[in-house]
Length: 254
Image 1 (tube, rainbow, N blue to C red):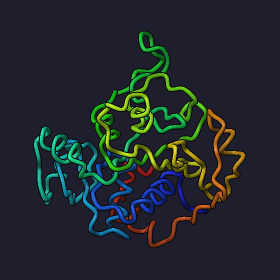
Image 2 (cartoon, rainbow, N blue to C red; image 1 turned 30 degrees about the vertical axis):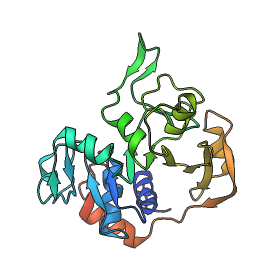
Image 3 (cartoon, one colour; image 1 turned 180 degrees about the vertical axis):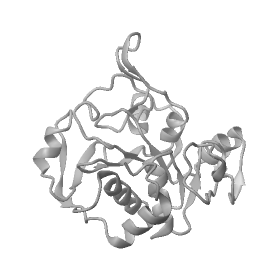
């Protein structure tokens, strides 16, 4: 891992997870980098979709917001919000939604609203935005977390912003969700994938990380895959486009 930063590792591993996916609802930050890297390496036909209504984005430079002007340059289509959410997302046309959050629980529900008590929170966060709709309707959801800690991977969320669809449907069969919810979580320690019942399971650790390190940094008794793999370090073919063309000024590669 010499010479590879944590954000580069997260981006490369996330981009690898996009193999075989076509249409991705991408958030700004590391998800944007991961989609761009997948497009530059293994999935040239991948379509980037942004909450602002841009679909099939081909930005000439790295966008810094979901409505940054470069997203419109060369885009295949720009839709109104009603069409994007009603036709594209709720219509089941998104293969992967990339979401972030301050907290995630063992079933893949996310908190992006508050840390602490809702009435008097320690930290007030941006809220849902389109995250709840993405969680409910994308075929599957990926989450990228820069820090794997017991306060970010928690037994009980301080606030449930985006409920895991499987859990929501079990609680109420009439809930109108169609997606699988979170299937993959990439953190600075490893990769968690959802078991058949939806519970997040440790499937891989990064080089130099022990399984015990990950379990100690998780806020619930973490289930382990039958064989926990070790992720392959980023290659030169992955790092060069990321550093030299996608984010040369290191906007997100902190």
